[in-house]
Image 1 (cartoon, rainbow, N blue to C red):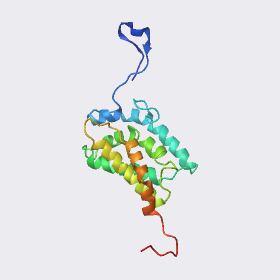
Image 2: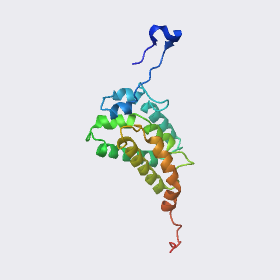
Image 3: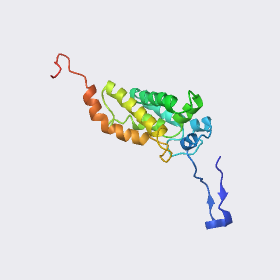
Image 4: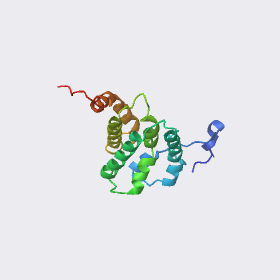
Length: 184
């Protein structure tokens, strides 16, 4: 819990109301335990917009109810990452480790709000699934297989890289018109 405190010796004569420290993902990577309920409701350190999985899921439900987004990209992204984390995370099939990886960091924000962007995501149904799988694999590789000096987050890098692949994914998954012959 963060509370107000005075800077020692009255430096600058100000009261400090924020404290910096390791993010939940950095703590998990270091082998420390994190409070899963705090991660879920957003009572934890982190970047603005990514700390409350509950608020993100409420926003996602609104987007789904109004049919602004499709479930294919977020579910394949989160599902692929979850399988990757369980297989290669080094903690076995620990549900608490998986929840910390899912609720900590920008995975939920990236999956529900960034990866579903109309301009940068595929439009074909199969392309959306391939895109989500690529995102999950790359996020897992960046987060879990990166060296000790690398940042513990990988969502933004995965989204940027996969956005470059969208034209190739679209070309490979675009359906043939009915009655047309395949090109030779």
